[in-house]
Amino acid sequence: MRQPTQELAHSNISFTERASWLITGGCGFIGVNLIDHLLKNIPGIRIRILDNLSVGSKDNLLEVASFTQKEANSIADRPTGVELVVGDITDYDTCLSCCRGINVVVHLAANTGVAPSVDYPRQDMKANVIGTFNMLEASRHSGVEKFIFASSGASLGEVEPPIDEEKVARPVSPYGASKLAGEGYCSAYFRTFGLKTISLRFGNVYGPRSKNKESVVAKFIKKALSGEVLEIYGDGEQTRDFIYIDDLVQAIMLSAKADIGGEVFQIATHNETTINELVKIISMLVNESVDKETRVKHVSARPGDVKRNFSDISKARKLLGYKPAFDLDAGLRITFEYFAQFKQEQIASSLLICHSYRAAE
Image (cartoon, rainbow, N blue to C red; front, side, top):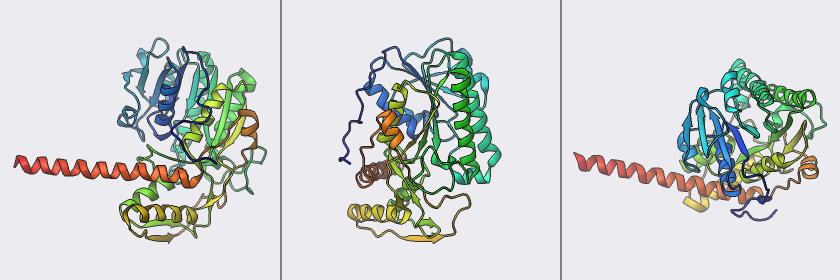
């Protein structure tokens, strides 16, 4: 894989200038990176965002775009510029309103993660099954041309890797089951109603602008920079397929362009990395940057966690032209630099506030 650059592979994808996109969960990590790419690469793009702000925030969105906030019941036509609707995908009327005048839906909004689904399985089901159903229904009634669903390798469960689209799914966690249900509905809506759906099974996504995420990469880098102990569940030999955010955005863009529907794709890198290996790289980056040793502690394994997970991406390569461009070492270095800079800005901001407070005394 080549070294990262600021340009995404396949960034010259052409869409009509009148293209209108709806991105659910668009104030989150993946959403803001996608929006940043759309605004930089598609002249005249119109974007509507539906987000309940439970994880994402307006501040996240402001990092990449200025926007106007709209009420769902006041939407009459396609978006103008970038619009934000604060609402929930579990409310069908909100979904229907937000799909007005939309060509492409990227459905990112979801309850994310295995642990929350184990603790609150009903909440997970409502967001990931009913929410996805609502978005599909609203899309077909609104004449949406393409529906891209953010799925996960968790939908397959505990199978012998590398995982591919032909393996029989046996979800281990409620989260995996809810994502599998979403894939099933996407398949049905293409074959029954002709809505061009594509389900993308994301690997473990990481990269800049993930400061609010609690995924393993973001969590470990934040803790390491703060001098906190990194807790590894189990022996640390469980494996994941880590994908840099720009490669994920590439896959979404290619899916929007592709004249196909009803398909599922593994979107990752076809590289198997243990959690112990991940910690080793992060520890090296911390040591290089702040000359500090990283402390590690092993704790009990979590229920619902898959032991091994990495993907066969040959189908995405063949049908979408997908080709990951960022290796783990380079992607982690960019991500680490982002977090280190963010931490420095936090420290500077705290010192400024403290100085201002003392001066006012």
